[in-house]
Image (cartoon, rainbow, N blue to C red; front, side):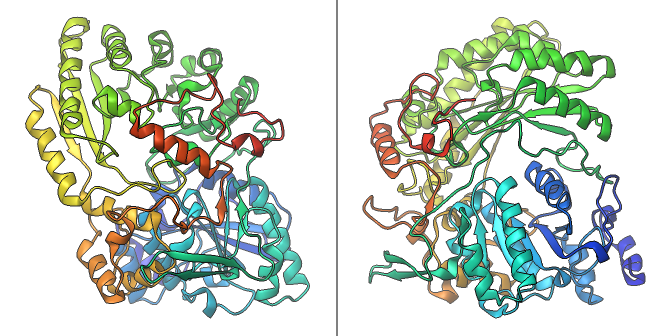
Length: 611
């Protein structure tokens, strides 16, 4: 570490974010390394170090001979100011070498509001922002993550995208680069080679043309690129790489615990949920594999809490058996088991009592909509009776704290649906009065509403987004209907969700808006302290781009969508059928009850969508 860095660290918040040296970090001898990867997370250390995908790929790449993967995070504003003041380029935590010294610069992107952080990190690294300005084989920038399913807003900046799950494709990409470097290839020659890997999308190999009304006229592949690029998945989760020896942070992070991934995919078909469709099909780990990974991870890290994580944890078939086996190890050692992503239709009081013997935490449920009609329209597949029975079960078991998540602005939503949220809350309060066994502690209900964002690869991808003004009217309507005591209501800001919708559904013309927003100083947009909606609106104005083209306009069903080159394995016809059913408030059963023919079976070597 440089003397300059030593001097500035005492001047910033949480200097432990920037020093590295944590237990289990991986340091290699550069003489034995022929490919260096700067693995960049476009947010702060606390967020990135909580990301299970980053931990998996960091370990996987570093197990490859001759490859050294190091971590890079976005600095907080105070650290960035000091770095710019003292001309310190962005660096990797393991070696403290500048990012510009690396062969590959990889970003994992899970949130649209981190896009400007990517540009800011490249600028701090003294790496050209535009892909066309990076001419050599060094500093190749690629990206993956759920946001890669619509790569177009970042098309001008990213050399190529890795689609789907990264355990296999990342190794193939690195080997392709290693050979290209050995062969003395040009950047263009390398991009031609890497584009032949299944799941790799090279934006410069596709030409986008537009109609006079601004809609896409055509997407034309070039250089032998495929018309569609299909995502990659891991077939056998028991055999897939999972690190049980991972970095132990030197400072507190958001999820300061061991995360155990039970399965990938989701059997549900919630029509608003991008992750539920993008991670299909369902593939689970066995109980024996999970127990081994859990114990090894806990013993190595020393953590006192473990989260059983998946999109819908309570849908893991053998959850009671797994919990019993884990408790045999965890309970005597005072290790708490946490079960997020619970559903009201399969909540088990017995299970919750068993797993929360060490520390009883609050319960979290996401009904998403207040009325049964709207829950059916979004295919939430949970009834009011199930919600209230679950609450009664929890309250009789001693729980007094409940978090409830809803959305406002959903397709077909009416004022009656908004008022129904307050009615459901009132019924939960009454349920507590009737069933609570611990009334010395008052009931606490944390109610949160989000502004619905129509996302790619969902049945609602064609929908209009409600205007910010209308969304806030519905927020105030709900506030006026909430009369019960003990309810803490918070709602997402409309400006942020509007911009999220623009970036989620945008095309290549947004690249110039992103660049202009970066030039105006936009960064860390997911943080209230830094988000500047006025600067974003100036960027749209300066570039002559109307954000409403991507939000309140909606998309026609026969329109070419910006993300149409990407294939996640779920068919367009399925999404159209589900959209039609939404307007009829007709539900689709989960995948275990009946196959809906979404197309995800084609991704599985076994031809099934089940764990």
